[in-house]
Length: 148
Image 1 (cartoon, one colour):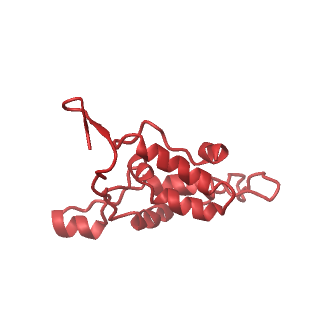
Image 2 (spheres, helix red, strand yellow):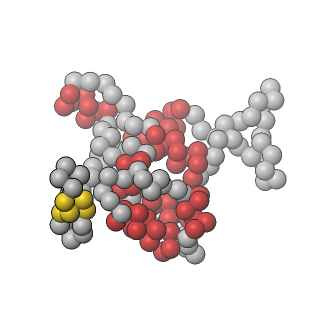
Image 3 (tube, helix red, strand yellow):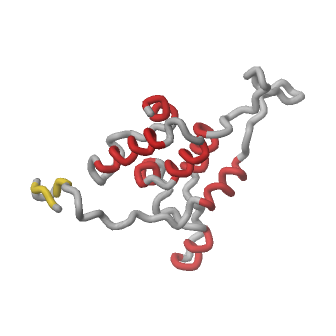
């Protein structure tokens, strides 16, 4: 579980819903410690902490923004880029021995281009935070009291 938390890490302070998100995240690491990496990535992708930290929560499609706001805005690309760069295929194509694959000019070949990021970012639209649970305590920062 600790090793997974070093590979797919989420800042423990980057969550506005208290400690329950951190505990849930740790449970995901423990649950998937000896499991399938694909299953872990799926569960981490739908985790509220990941959505908030990598900013795909409340990301909207181009069509939605145009229809409802009259603007041409692109979906947030942050999670799409991080997913490909850090969690799956990396930045550069590699030989089986780990050396980078070079093109005919001697430059390192990239594994993806911006169009791939834009396409993948479309998948991560339409997510929003669910309402808060009422069965755990959190501090009401406006009054300093505990709420239930």
